[in-house]
Amino acid sequence: MVRLFDEIPCIEGKSIMLNKIVQSDAPGLQELVNSKKVYRYLPTFLFEKQRENVHETIDLLYGDLFTNKESLLLCVRSKQGGTFCGLAECYGLREELNKISIGYRLLERCWGHGIASQAVSLMVSYLYDKTNIELITASTMVENAASARVLHKNGFICTTHAVEEDWGYDTPTITDKWFL
Image (cartoon, rainbow, N blue to C red; front, top):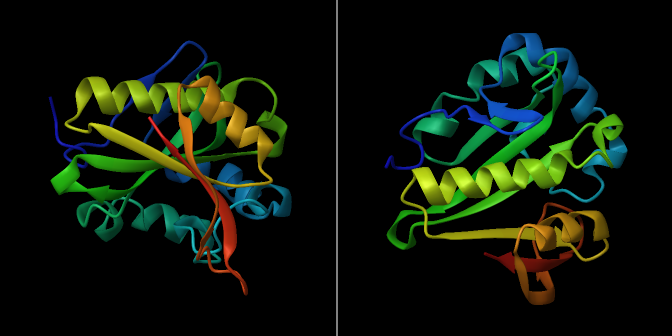
């Protein structure tokens, strides 16, 4: 058993894998961060959106962000061809509680193919089976029905509905809180 943030894992599923983001993923990452549809249900302050140069973003992913246990960002990658599909993230570690939050974002062309559900399933399996994590949470905007379905399919329960949270917008974001 490893402690989360002791390694950058490679997690393989049936048709996708979650692994380290590398410079050759830059075109896919650029497509992702440029998509208004992808980020309409996400906080404004996500790490990959903080710089204009995605190559610089990739260079910094496994530096202080990882070392300080702020976020573990992994590539969601098709096993067939190794194509970049999106990002999977573990963030908000509470070591004293062995608790982490998860999130994901996929390229629009990868929506509706079960990739999000498989990515969440892989993250959950890795976190519970290979690390010391005991509690996994997630948050969704109330209007993000697709992500709510993905979490529900993976056994998450919505424990708090329609609470205000600061996601970096002009007004508080109304979110649902999910626990597994």
